[in-house]
Length: 252
Image 1 (tube, rainbow, N blue to C red):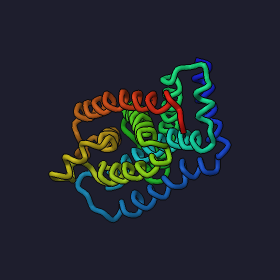
Image 2 (cartoon, helix red, strand yellow):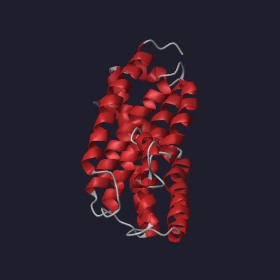
Image 3 (cartoon, rainbow, N blue to C red):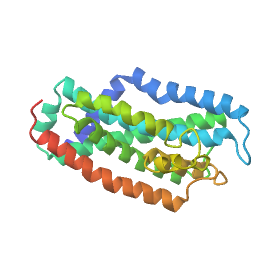
């Protein structure tokens, strides 16, 4: 447990030391998204029974959860590869699974912090608050775990982590634009609605929309949790296998 906490503390300390970049990721970029798409564009697009800002704000929060986990876990793996700190992980008197969970927990903390920050910016800029705080926190927690596991798979499944950076861009684009972040699932028609169901950002965004305004058409809450549980049941064993397979015989 001490080794696990020490690894988590190291990741958080590295983020604190690069606080300028961290603050830009947490505040500046999301604030621009919220202002442009929520405040400006949201006042232009007419909708029945809701404001467009109430549709897009949950999607921006979902994007922040995704990118927060990606940056935390992916950045740790990439820096470990380039600066040879992976050897330090492997010399720790713990199992590979413990090392993996330290990275996942760091991604969880960073993802929830990103989602909370953007949720606060949404309130300040747009004046929008969720009807309940429990569902956004639950979506942030589950989403951060999912994207942390996915990041491990993306960066460690290729031959080397630097190759994973190329795969990362391939995944980030469809999940951002096809995962119901800038629009609700009800706006899609087949076959695009079927594609959206394959992306975890769809379930996170729709779950947050239900929390912010239940009157906005969204995927049924039961289907949202089923989709998230199925995704988790797939990604956790896959990430566990990829992590142990890649670092069991460390030859980079």
